[in-house]
View 1 (cartoon, one colour):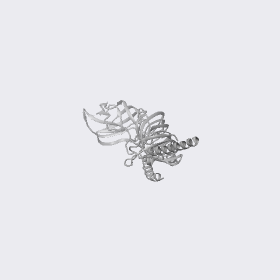
View 2 (view 1 turned 180 degrees about the vertical axis):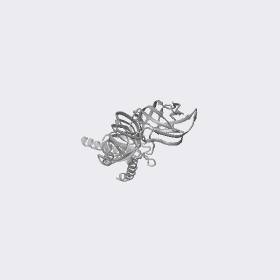
View 3 (view 1 turned 30 degrees about the vertical axis):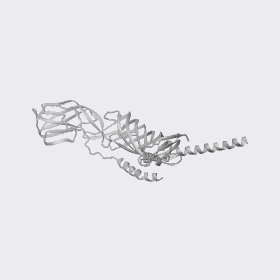
View 4 (view 1 turned 45 degrees about the vertical axis):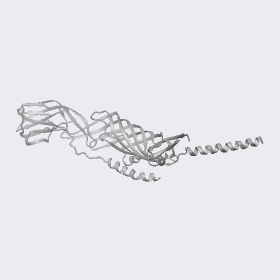
Amino acid sequence: MNFMKRSLIPVFAVVAVIMASCVDGACYEDTESLLSVAFYRGEVQTPVQKLSVISLEEYIYNNKPSVSKARIPLNPGAGSVNLNFTINDTTDMITFNYRSEVYMFSKECGYSWIYNIESVSSTNNIIDEIAIINANITISDEENIRIYY
Amino acid sequence: MKRISVYIISTVLLAASTGLSAQFRHSTADPDSVDFQLNIRIGADIANPILYFINDNNMNLEGYISVDLNEKYGISFNGGYADYNLSKFSYEYGATGIYFKPGADFNILKPQISEGKYWAGIGVRYGVGIFSFETPSITYNNYWGTTTTSIPPQSATAHFIEIAPGFNAKISNNFTMGWRVNMSTLLYASPKEKIGPIYIPGYGARDKGVNFSFNYFLSLSFPYKTIKAKFKDDDAGANYEELETETE
C-alpha cells in the first residue's frame, strides 16, 4: 500500500497539468485572407495620392493618402465582387472573379477562407491595365494584383 | 525376520530419499530468487468518465487487457470509444470513433519488490483511430457580412505512437488499481486536406506535436502462472533470470 500512497503525488500532479492543458486558448491571429493590390506607373510601384475603395455602404479605404498597396477583403459566399476604386479622384469599377475554399486555420481560431483569382476586369477611366501576379490569396502579404494607372 | 528387515530397509530408504529430497530443495532454493506471479489483467479507465461529468463535450471510454510474459515484459491491448464535440464562437465540430492501441509494457521494478503485485514502468503502443468527423456549422464575419457554411461528415483514420509510463498495484487477490500518463505523437492522419480532423479519438488534438492524457484504471487480475525470478542484491532487477516455471 505504500506504493499506492507514493503514487498519489504524481497522480495529482499529472491530473493538474492535464486539466490546465485542457483550457481552450483564445485566437490572437488575423485569419482573413486579403487580396493584395499594388499600384504601378510603368514598371515602378508608385503610391496613389488618394485612394477610396467601396462596394457596399461602408468604405474599405476612404480617401487614404499615399497608398502603394491596398488589402481588400473578398466575399467567401460569392464568386465575384465589384469594387469602386477611386484613384486620385477618378473612379473605376473593378470586378474580381474567384473561387473560394474553406480551410481549418486552427482549433482556437476556427475556419477561414482562401481564394483563387480566375479573372479581373475593369473600366478604364484611370486604370490602364490590371495584371494577376499571384492568383492564390492567403493570409500572407504577397502581391496578388497589379493596377497600372 | 525377513519381513522386519524389509520394513527396516524400506524405512531407511524412505528416510534417506526424504532427506535427499530435502537436501535437493535446499540447494535449488536460491536465496536470490523470488516467486513472481504472472497476471492477466482486464481493466477500465475511470478518469475520463469522471472528467465527462465536468466537461460533457468529450466522452472517452477506454479499457485494456494485458498479459505478463515474464517479470519484466508484458503485452497489452487498449481499446476505446470517443465522442468529441467542440463549440466555439465561429464553428461547431464533432468527431466520433473507436481506437486500438496494441503494445508492450516494461516493468522497471525489481522482482523482489514487484512480486507480480506492483508494476511501475513504461508502455509503448501503436495507436490506430477509425472515426468520422464533421463541422455542422461555420460562421464567418467580414466586410461583406456573415457567411455560413458546413462540412459534411467524413471518414478518417489516424496512426500514432504512444509512450505510457505509469504504476499499478494489486489491492487484493483479483483487484488492481493504477494510473498511466499517455504521451502520443501523430504519425499520419487522413484526409490530409485543408479541412482534416481537429480531434482524433484516442489521440487528441491534431495540431499538437505531442498530446498528453491520463488514465486511472480499475482492473481485475487473474494470476495464471508463478515463476521464480532471480536477482542480484547489488543490482537487483537488472540481471535476474527465470529459473523454474510451474503452474499454480
